[in-house]
Amino acid sequence: MMNHAEKSGIFLGDHKRAEWHDQTLWLIRKKRDKAISTVSEWEELRDKASQIKEHVLSNLDVYLLQFEEEAIKNGAQVHWAFDAESLNNSVYSIINSCNAKMVVKSKSMLTEECGLNPFLENKGIEIVDTDLGERIIQFRNEPPSHIVMPAIHLKKEEIGELFNVRLGTEKGASDAQYLTSAARKHLREKFMAADVAITGVNFAIAETGSVVVITNEGNADMGVQNAPVQIHCMGIEKILPSMKEMGVFIQMLARNATGQPISAYTSHYRKPKVGGSMHIIIVDNGRSIHLGNEKYRKSLKCIRCGACLNTCPVYRRSGGHSYRYVIPGPIGSILSPLRDMKKYKDLPFACSLCGSCTNICPVKIDIHRQLYNWRQDISRRKLLSPSKKYGLKFAGKILSNHAFYNFFGKNMRLAVRHLPRKILYNNINVWGKGRELPAAPEKSFKQWYIANHK
Ligand code: SF4
Image (tube, rainbow, N blue to C red):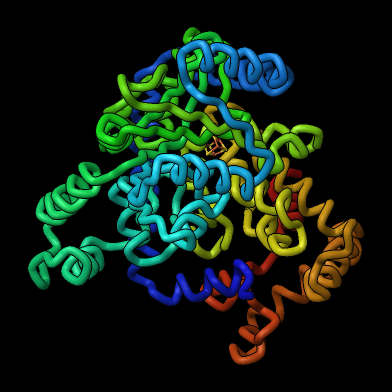
């Protein structure tokens, strides 16, 4: 399987797409900055959100049981799923028990993580993703490339071609409004025909036993209101003590994600509809193991706003699919080695350690520090490739010895000035594959500093 660097190389090979992807995500980052500048207590909210999440993670046993009790009182049926297989089986058995054949689903990273769609399709169930971006990538048989904007890697012209084939839109049409109308018509038919609606969960409130689902398209509501059976899939970390804490996150989520003051729909589902049934599946799937891991447990505070992806210089220039994990970008590079360290050992190195992700995270996850920890753990487990291992050893020797450092600095400056291009841009110089080396200065910084600060 190709690693992150190789996949990024392919993404960067399409210069126009790479540039446009980078600029689009940066624009969203700027919108976010503007939106948070209107909230004077933003940093206090971040502190508060972080404290709430840490408190919840330390008291999951209490809040999850309280949530279950309240949800059952409300008339919902609560199921517990230890892993992906048990989530998928629980969903299937609910679908089976009501003889359903058609299921609509609103966006849920948890069901992506557990591979619910292919599981149900193999059982002969039609499952339709109803978030527009999700439907687009479902048509393309691709995983999402971003946790909030799953089809951000595609241009409207490509979507126009896809819809021409799948929905019969006019050939060559790429007007966003026209394509959205076509998708709306197509999805409405699916909503009306669905027997079951599945949603993810943004927050689950222990005090009320209700779940909160946030969307911009209202597709979760369309699904839940029309289908007789509703299923909400939530990770154990989605719990909040009460509605009071919800207020903190509601002010932050949309602003940090897309720069909107609030998402278009914040829906609270508390009890089944008259004549319908409501199921809530609480999923662990490795989270309680993460919880016991002091170094990485804080990654469970994530509210999946996607802002760390938008700001990351590596994600913006390499695209989500280069990460190969369901959650790409900085937070995905922490979560993926927790699942399979060997398979995803390259991801913590896909990072400049600039710390922009940590600065932007609404729940104050120390993302770049955790990535740095991963690098050390991967090295301790002897999982580094020989080139990285010996390269880092060599760099360590030079950087820890000032005589070596001066010697190499001087000779590298000379080499960059005088060696022919063919030798400088050899296969070992991966840095120079897509970039030009800067002109070598006459003097080192140290020489300049001594000369100017006598
Ligand atoms: S780690 Fe923080 S910034 Fe990144 S998606 Fe999660 S909450 Fe958002």
